Length: 255
Ligand SMILES: [Fe+2]
Ligand SMILES: [Fe+2]
Image (cartoon, rainbow, N blue to C red; front, side):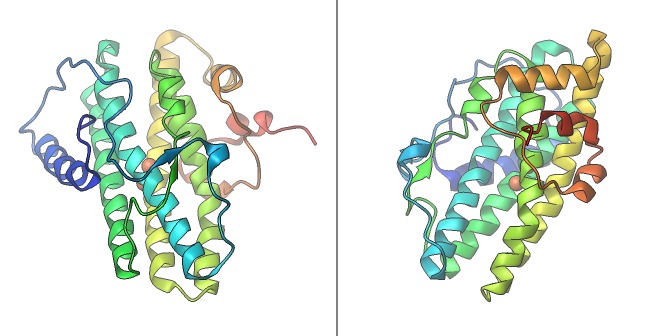
């Protein structure tokens, strides 16, 4: 999967692997050597975050740029889910761990597909625009430690997605694009269990390692996350994911 270059193939392979896992046809993850970076298609052209063109404010071009950026996140999310399944097998994890992340992979593939179809309806495609290459950074920075990965990816980055989705849905609706708004709303709802899985397995590992989950989370984020945890927070969604305020509020920049 991580060696699969074309996003459409990532989607179909994810669908068949996740179905085979859920039916019990595949029951063992095995030991594989993973690439440091997953294979990516020739397009979109990947750029450093600072070299990205400024997003245009409104109109059809602005909307396409927005959908393209989200599709890029979802494409990365497919790889991130399979990476967490396959990279940390030395941790002796229960089957329920793999069930959760295989489900996440299936969700991310569906999300990517929904966006891809919507872009096609609007006359565009994934790959048409440059995309930023910062997203795999959090994965590379945490490939040595599953707790670090859970802290930075589901508990920081995906939780951030919960915060930004309602505003984006609202904006799409106000701009008269109810279809895209609906897609984004569905994606936002389906991201809640991803954050929940992050919290659940982070707590599981903290307990196993005899660590305080809150203090350990703060340490990982301070040491490894190159960004800010900033409000406004979507407390309702975060609470549903059992992401308590004590995890993230102490990490917000002081005013
Ligand atoms: Fe997603
Ligand atoms: Fe997700």
